[in-house]
Amino acid sequence: MAASLRLGCQGILNGIKLIRTCRGIPQSHHGHYRHVFQSQSLFGAAPMKVMMPALSPTMEEGRIIKWLKKEGESVSAGDALCEIETDKAVISMDSNEDGVLAKILIKEGSQSVRLGTLIALMVDEGQDWKQVEIPAPESSPAAPPPTPPSSAAPTGTVSRKVEPRVETGQLRLSPAARHILDTHGLDPGQAKPSGPRGLINKEDALNLLKQTGSRGPAASKVASVPSAAPQPPQPSQPAHPTSTSQAYPRPSIPPISVPGKPAAPGTFTEFPSSNVRRVIAKRLTESKTTIPHSYASIDCDLGAVQQLRMDLAKDAIKVSVNDFIIKAAAVTLKEMPEVNVTWSGEGPQSLGSIHISIAVATEKGLLTPIIRDAATKGVQEIAANAKALAQKARDGKLLPEEYQGGSFSISNLGMFGISGFSAVINPPQACILAVGRSRPELSPCLDSDGIPALRQQQIMTVTLSSDGRLLDDQLAAQFLDKFRANLERPQRMALI
Image (cartoon, rainbow, N blue to C red; front, side, top):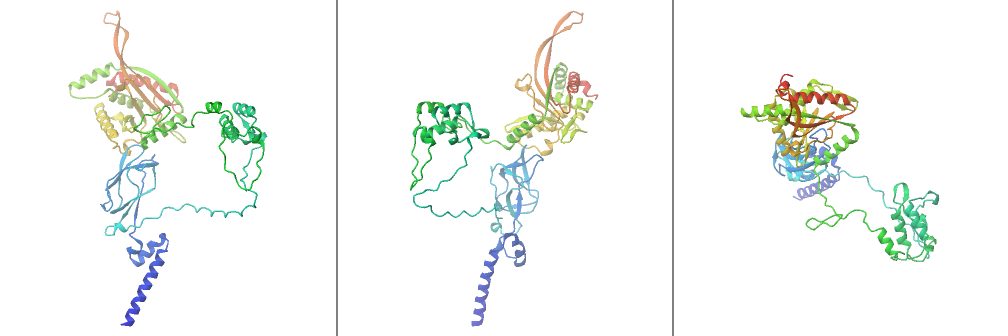
């Protein structure tokens, strides 16, 4: 009996020693020891990492809109885990594994989550998801140990930090700063420059004047004598408070306004921007700074298109003017393949397909869904595709293949009453066509008897923005001329 108790106590002591030893094992080796001991109580359940995926080729970061699964829920391969806002749309992220969602690490609404960031953990079916092993965060380089304080200074002296001082010959002063320093007899070497390349500007001179105003000009040039104990700094009054306050009254930045309270003059209110807005701003800046834009405009007569629309409406076929514009642009690109090109890092690339990107305004920004193979589709089919894609864009449900790979863009602001405008090219495309509203105009003509008369036309102005590296002005003019011919004779487009 005594021997059994002795063996039992010895086993308990050995187990305690083993646990202490295992808790000191690095996490990178836990998998090997778990395989040996088959114990979740020591190390926790082995996790399956869920990372922020790249849901589009241009995506660099995402925003988690909503988690569709809760902690502890079973997940099958193909189930939607969460909704992520990319640089173009809101896309559901599907699970690649079967298991249980154990821990959500990135909460809903988190913005600017970089690709590859750990957002959640899963465990296998049958494991205790509450005991999931949460990986330790990546440790930053250890900071160097603090320098031990130096020995106390001898009595009667105070150690002071010696700051490097710019030589007088190297000082750069603005005219206003030089005038202030010369007028008040201040040493320029004591001013702290804040301008570009060490320039001492007017504000720097006024700051020095505030610090030395109460002591007089001569006091700024006298070196301080070491004393037995440091004296607390005394607030000084400027020598000329009225002129100084008038010369330096403005704050460096406007104050931030408080929601719900009236805004004071010069204030602003910050509001968060979506990933789509940030990507649009980045791409527009890239386009205007790296692409040499060239512009050309032409007027088109919409009389034949309007008449054909009325004839189709009698057969309950509803199409818009924009549908005819898409068809005319696609047919013109088919006739002129030298315009259906894009620019890559190595030079121009000719495209074998004609995919038209149409600009759709949404609450989150301007999106460009694509009508693929538009040259081979009829106007009625183009109308159906454009309507469906526009609705998906407004709902944020576009798939990556529905907005990537366009070869030519069209932006129509005619429905907003805009007569004409110039659009920014959507890289790597070579062109974008800006469409204005139709307007009635009178033009001279000859009647049936050969007598000069006037007739009313529905005129629409379109402006082509083209990449000067790919299209010269003559090629852009030829494209617009053929585009007008196709739009003014819509029956011709069916024959090409």
